[in-house]
Length: 438
Image (cartoon, rainbow, N blue to C red; front, side, top):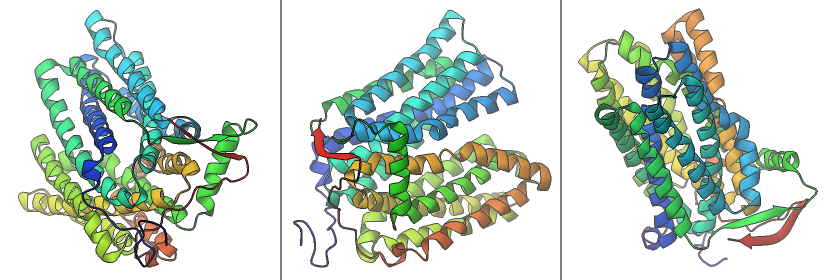
């Protein structure tokens, strides 16, 4: 039995050790700053396009597409880079590039030279910087904290992120109203500088495994995909996540339009319901360690995926009126609580089980399949709405949410009743055994 294991071979959950971890506190502060700033930009940049540049609906759609495209184009190469090089350096580089790109928007606005081509380029480069940062950040956590602390660390991250995202969205709306859309982007510039400073202050905890010189980018991507495809637990988890992400992408493409236009919700009502739903994320993330300790990660992960399509059923039958607003708000609370609980557990499980030299590539495969499929999901949603209508499209999206259950039930995840043991570093063919610290 290894040090830190319980008698049954599982890893104990240390509830308070993470709070005293200086490096983790800096990591969490930096990530929250970046996320809250990103939420401001998510409000401000479309407002710049619509209010300042008078963009058409087609131009706004192109802007949204370009902001999501980097997840598909560069997620896999970003994973290779994060496994090859210092994760702290890549995180700081991503933050600084994002800050430079973002500051160009209000400066161009002040100089009177801001146009849609500038905005297109800015959101695309910003997307690349964020994909690079996130590939390093999520794979950096297992280097930063011990395996037995990952469950609790991810719980705190999920809870903090739900608050930061909500706060950033509200702050973005307030800044756009008070300062104007373009100048509001300065808030995200500041957030990335704060994030870079926090990560720079972390000392130690970064490891990277150098590929041999003859192993190129394509081979690094191939071995990462192969590793995920062969892993009996990581593979079904990522397949379930990507399928659910695609289904939600179909649903979310027209969700806001449906609520505002067909159910006659006001923007204030929509914001209030989304805020109430955010409480579900906070509660789910905070409860995840206790639920995992009581039932293990496997059953709650499957239950979380199984409840998600049930929470979408009210949307299929909703009509205008206060009663349906209550029903949909309650459904959203349950859905986001399930997502946060299952998400915290599956993320910790993948991080603990994955060989350290494949951490970034494993996470990037998940990003590539989940986030990278969103533009395709939007296209599919548009085709379905044109052919069958919005409610039928929602029915298709809800039905697709049953696929992850079919993926998870036959897998070993169903019987996973303890937090898995952290595996030892392995050196597959083509990899050096030397670990570099930075």
